[in-house]
Length: 135
Ligand code: THU
Image: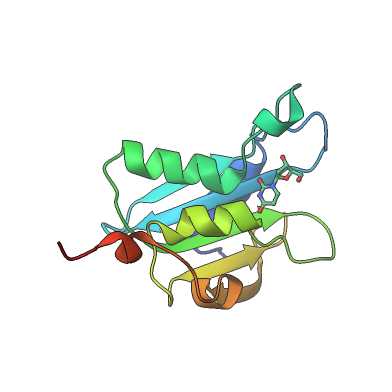
């Protein structure tokens, strides 16, 4: 069975993670508004709070490449549980997504476990639209 290219990119990115402290490798991949795929992995740091999540890496890659909207995003991680984006990453995704944007949770091999919408994971969220204040 061949994986969706987005899922394959997330699982592949996971293998590049720098996670010597948690040993918890995570990969992410974004499909942007132009259909392009941007992968990212978690990058930990000896000063623990300075580590960054896989989703943050994928968002940075998308923005650098000129992408401005997340059409869908996939996250790949190991274990029995669902590796959903952390709270901070949900907010980071919100900046470039809409309430109905799909967030796919994959296993370490890139197989889909469950899909959510951004609104399911971050209800009543705050975003750029709130700053569009009429003057
Ligand atoms: N992590 C991610 O990169 N994305 C997630 O969705 C969950 C957690 C990372 C952060 C840290 O490097 C490691 O997983 C353990 O929390």
